Image: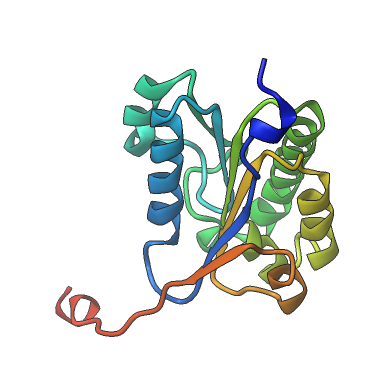
Amino acid sequence: MFEVDKLEKGYVKIYCGDGKGKSTASLGRALVCASEGKNVFVVQFLKGRLTGELDFFNQLEPELKIFRFEKEEGYYENLSEQEKKEENQNIINGLNFVRKVLTIGECDVLVLDEILGLVDLEIISVEDIIKLIEMKDDTVELILTGRNLPEKVAAYADYISEINILKDEISHNS
């Protein structure tokens, strides 16, 4: 058993901005932590049901586990209003899972991918995110991603990385 003073402080890290790569950065951090023997949970929101693109990560269990609670295959933004309504309940179930993980202390690193987008879509509030941050144990590293970062949430962060597009010729050539 580790002595309390030898445990690492669990920081709150945020990857935000208009650029692509926020999820990739958070998954990269998750891989580094898993390679160090830490128990890592990744909960992804607004990305649809888990598909084959993440099958590789199954090989990294039990150190790294990825969860998605949504049932539809498509991204949230492409769903009909009725499908969004149904997915909102699945998203709330995912948030309840996150609360349970934080309460029990099941992991060393918790990535909440696109959780800030849930605020943009008014599925949850800024206060809901702050409550999650406040729930975490001092040794748990919490990573949040999303396009827009509310000022109130930024105040709780130890590290913020803003990812923006400086040049984009790809979308014009597609």
